[in-house]
Length: 359
View 1 (cartoon, rainbow, N blue to C red):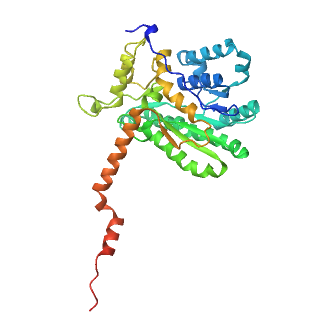
View 2 (cartoon, rainbow, N blue to C red):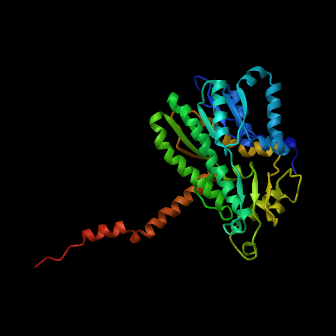
View 3 (cartoon, rainbow, N blue to C red):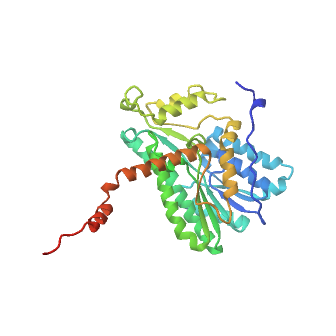
C-alpha cells in the first residue's frame, strides 16, 4: 500500500475568465463534489450559497466531517473575511418544496441574485426490480429514490426559475451520470430516476430558452454519484445470486469494490449490501480518494457554469464517452436491422409500387 506522500493529488481546475464574480447555488454542498467545487469557487472569487441536508450534517458524523473541515478552512484562510462574506450556508432538503423556496430567497437576500444553480444531490438504491417488490418497505425505497433524484431537482429548479426569469439570465447545471444513457442491472430504479430527470430537463431547456436561461446536463462516470452519496440496498433474492444468475449485477460489483477500497476502516463493508434487511451506508472513501474521484467532474462543472454558450450535455471522461458512443452505435444498428418493421417505411414503399390500371 502506498503512503500518503506517494499519492498524486488531483489537478487544480483552471476556471474560465469572467468580468465579474459569479453567484452559485450548490444544492448538496456537503458532498465530495460540493465541497471541492465550493472551495475552488471561493478561491476563484465567486459567491456561493451552499445547501446542506440538516439530518446528514447533524447525525452523520462521517458524512459531515469533511464539510466541517471545509468550514474550518474558510474560517482560517488568509483571506478569511472575504471568504466568509462570499459563502452562505443554508439548510436544504430538496424533497421539501418549502425549504427550496426558503433557501433560494435566502440566497437572493444575501447576494442579490443567483447566476448558476448546480443540482448535485443524489442517492442510489441497489436491487433488482423483483428485489424492490418484496415488501411494503422495499416498495418505499422506489418512492424514496424518485423523491430524491427526480422530485428533488424539480423542486429546486421550480423555486429558482422565477429568479432567473426576472433578470432574464441564468444557468441550470444538473449532475447525473452516464446511467442517464445506459441501463445497469441491479440499479433499475436509480437508472429510471436518472432518465426521468434528464427527460424533464431536456424538455425544460426549450421552455426556458426564450428567457435566456440555459440548461446543461453533466454526466460523469456512474461511480461519481454512487461512491459519494448514501447507498441503500434491498434484501437480495436467491434467484439473483451469482450462482443462479450470470448477469453482472451491481450489488456484487459494488460489494467487491467497497471491500477493496484503500483506507477503508471496515473490510467487510461490502457485506452490508447482502444483508437480509434494508441497509444504508456511505462508502468509506478517504478524503484524498474523494478528491481524486471528483476532480475531473469539478473541473468540468466549474468551466461550464455561467458560460455564455454552454453545452446542453457534457459527458465527463473518455470512458464515459466511449460507453455512450457504443450504446448509440448499437441503437443505430438496431434501427437498420428492423427498419422493415417500420409502418412508415411500409407506407412509403406501397406508394412507390405501381398500381394496376382500371381497364
